[in-house]
Length: 488
Ligand SMILES: *Cc1c(COP(=O)(O)O)cnc(C)c1O
Image 1 (cartoon, rainbow, N blue to C red):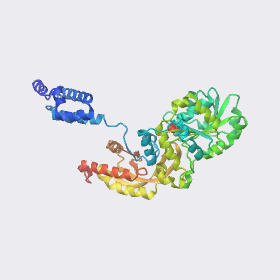
Image 2 (cartoon, protein in one colour; image 1 turned 180 degrees about the vertical axis):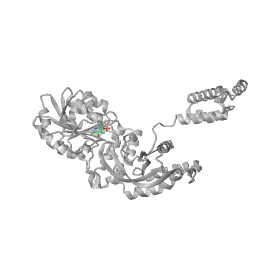
Image 3 (tube, rainbow, N blue to C red; image 1 turned 90 degrees about the horizontal axis):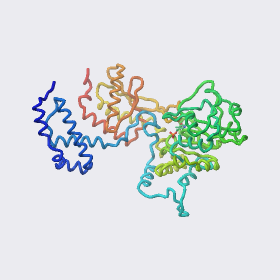
């Protein structure tokens, strides 16, 4: 049944101003100045079509359209349409290196270097000494070698690219020996066996899932072997009856046979993290010292830099890798190099690293800091989400993330939201999770054990101020929600 009669509808339609008239109005001149004529015209046509659609369907809410109303509709639609799709969020997941939220955050020095590289020409591939063409790797390979003890280094788009390139350059049509316990999938479809076949190398699995011995590698070496490879298990751990052969044992075996050992370290840290009370992770330098001929690792995991894949190791092997055509396809851009250099430089002063390198600062954030932040955010969050929920400040556990130290957690502090009626409230918690995700700067937490958990480890001062401001505005926009006992 229609709420609008045919005659009424025709009358309403007749009063809609013409497209030409609307476009020529003063209201629309500002819009056209901001978004351009083509976009505004298209948006206006969509707005008119929508209105006609509603009117013809007899929608009760349909009312006469005037230029002011059209302006409001088109303005909102254009703003929504032109909002950046890549947006800042609050990472309150407790995972510091969250792959889906962009992993490592760059320190200011790196951000400034990127800005400069974006806006000014630079000697990306230009040798300032000779005035001739240079190699972009030359900008940072010495620094990488200094920090890792390697002879040579190169940088590509990410660690997956580093592994693909290494295997393509050194093991195409040949065999690569890998322990069955290390045939891992890293998420986002990075699987060692798949990368291996993409690189044209033949995977030779040895040992079993839980135990691999040196003799397994020894017996697998044949005339067609190119590499012995070790892969950091990254995102899983096997406990119990296990045996893994270290690089230190494999390297002599490979080297007497004239073979190389490649290690995919995954996160690849440059410093001993235990000095900050963090779990132990083998460093790149230790891996090289243990005899690895090549080591690959990510730039945006524990290293705390931009997305990149670093390959370090023997000079002759790096030279071979750099000559491979895939190197050109997988190379990094100037922004990556600009960001990487200051981050690497920070490692020259390890005693200041925990204060300067964002990732390490977050990983080592004092409990008292996070607890104080929780006390400050608690009342604002409570009034923003209302009396149907109960917020408390509680200790919790963060994760490093991105496959670094998968089983280790870091004691942390944050806010825990439960339903006020004490019921499990699965749906209510999901609704709240969604509501926080829909804020101007989305708040990303996690639901576990019948509660929404907001870990404050990654909420540093500037972000905290912004979150409090956003939640205060939210509370003001929904005053009824805020009063305790709004729902019996
Ligand atoms: C993370 C990881 C990769 C992939 O690194 P990206 O930089 O994400 O490409 C490869 N291997 C291991 C062992 C990893 O942990």
